[in-house]
Image 1 (cartoon, chains in turn orange, cyan):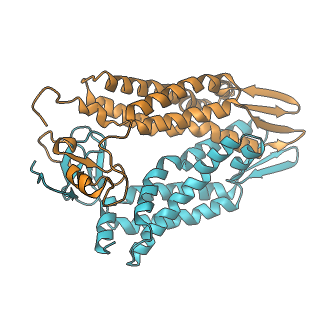
Image 2 (cartoon, each protein chain N blue to C red):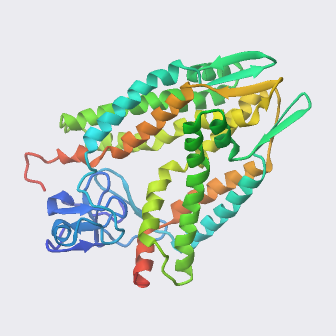
Image 3 (cartoon, helix red, strand yellow):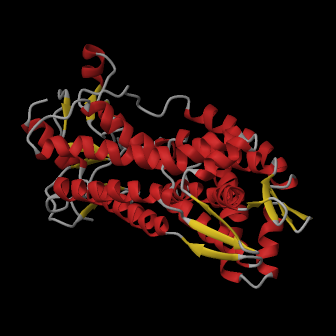
Length: 217
Length: 210
């Protein structure tokens, strides 16, 4: 590991300091008490951990889980071609692509629109639960799971962008038009809310139980 | 690890943003990365001429962003009638269809945030190159971190590909000039973020004594 020091279990919290969320400057608690709770380098408000991390993450997760239902039940778009309307849901869109022989694209859309949102909600539920119940097992693996979850979340927007392009492009009244469906709003809301849920979760909470009960730190 | 318990704030040590473990910030060679020894998170990078390269990439990105907005992304032809769409048309179409929430979201993710990222980078790095302190350094750096997840140009490209494949079934779809500019803009933006070394940025700002 380059540039990293090999020993000790000192954390910012254990030496009574905090790390700025934006610029990562290490600021001591005594400085914060004397000069105000603002990062001297970038001006961001300082917090030891993300504020209200757990309650915010839980609230956003519950909201996302509820919206997941209309996102999948209601249609996301309707294609009218020569007067024939075809309505499709998220999963319907994947099935159409697969039925048309577009396996690669069908797989991409399946992963982005079906797999990622479910995976993300379950992974964050698991992480929030593990912190709430103060599990100590495999903190590194759980941090990796968090990092992966945070990284993949945005990719679910593919379907929303696809719809925006179709409705802007296909508007030849009599021949073909594409319109969006209400499912698209719920789906975009699920993606955005789970992104916020991942942002409000503080992975350092996973490590805070570490070393409790021994003299490290 | 030894650290003075009476420090105010320090750049010689840093805490891992994902697990809070303290690390001594040591000098690493160009092109190397520093990772957390406990959880593996990326802590810092070092690139040769980091700030100049990031500036070059963001100026490139900004030029391509302008081109990407001038011409159509895709063209669509059916029974002799043609339609084409520009980057902003997706957001407008949602808005006009009554889905204003989606219109705003698509506008932010595909137009506003990608442009804002490039503008913040240029207004931050160009004055530094000219030996002057940028006007709103603190705000600009906060914006850069804050905007990052919401600039979704690379995801928009996949959206274009899926739309293209779906339309192929019942019409002739063509690729517009702006699609190439858009893809190059995404590459330039990603490179700008990758080459930007924030420690070099703070060091340069300190030299200029902001």
